[in-house]
Amino acid sequence: MPKKIKEILCLNALFIRLFSSFLLIILLISSSHVLTNKIYKKSMESEITGNVDSRLQILVNELESIFYKIKDDIFLNTFSKFYHDLRGSHLSPYKYGIIEGELNNFKLTHKYISEIFIIIKTPMQLLSPNEMQFNTFFNNNTYHKDFWVQEMMDEVFSFKFYPADYFADLSTFAAQSNNYLMPIAFKQSNNSNFIMVALINVNVLLESARSGFTEDLFLFTKDGVLLFPKSTNQVTFNKDLLNTDSSYSKQDNGYIFALEGSLNELNYYKFYSNVPIKQQINKILVMIQFIIICSVLVSGLIVLYIVKRFNNPVKQIVQLIKMQENNQEYNISSDFKSIAGNIKSLIEKNNIYEKNISRKDSLLKTFS
Image: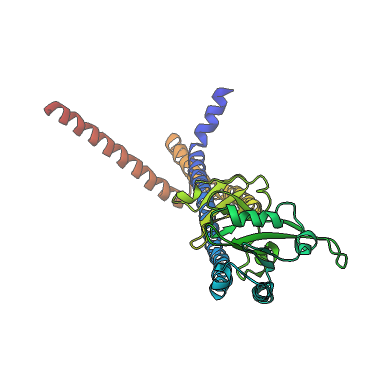
């Protein structure tokens, strides 16, 4: 059996070598697509991360500008306008009402400000909004009136962000609702006798951002306090990301981008899921692999056809030459005789060249 297989292989040696050579070339070209796919995925990742980073930068600039306007245009301007009243030891309820009305006007032009108020402490009295504002319209277990009075007297800061929380509206003429609000406070850094507070509606703020791209946005203070949303939803944040050369970190299900605000000492993180992109890339890769497999199969059949068309005539010519050599009386056509003669002549010349080369090699070895 092995002898028979060997004879078959010998008879078809040229065919096998030709077919293997062509097939090897096809496989090498096809395998190059593996490298191409890796380059394609890397290029797509680079394009996506660059696009997300630039869009996040636009959003951060917009939010930073809004927060800076609250600090500069609202708080500082109001403080400058009523400087002597706020620094004085006596303030009438009438004057307090004027300051309160000035602050309320900002709610008309800044839709993301749900409420803005001021608490002023003088040696004789504590001026603040009506108790209903804290107990009914903006009810919260943490950010109540006593909390802001304590912040005014004890804490040392001039401009501060607080974690957003839900404020309940318990008024009888409105259905009970919860608004997700982030307090921002302003006062003199120490020994302050007043505190201004703006309650920012986070949802309205993000919806008003012209650049959009606010989904899965996380806002932290420079000390790592999460301002919004309420939780990170199991997204892992690398707090050292802001100190590295890269603006993002890669995770199993997406990317975490980080940018540091230049005006308000805030850190912005954006989670960008790569699940839809992975699904799209996998679909494309499966399609490409299917095309490659089909191409290899079709190419293999074409190669088989071409090699057979080339191999069979050559094989017949070789057989005719052998038959002619074994049987001089065997008649073949003049065309085949001419072809056979030329091939035989080439073979004989090749043999002569080999003998001459061998003889010269022997002479060189003798003289060396």
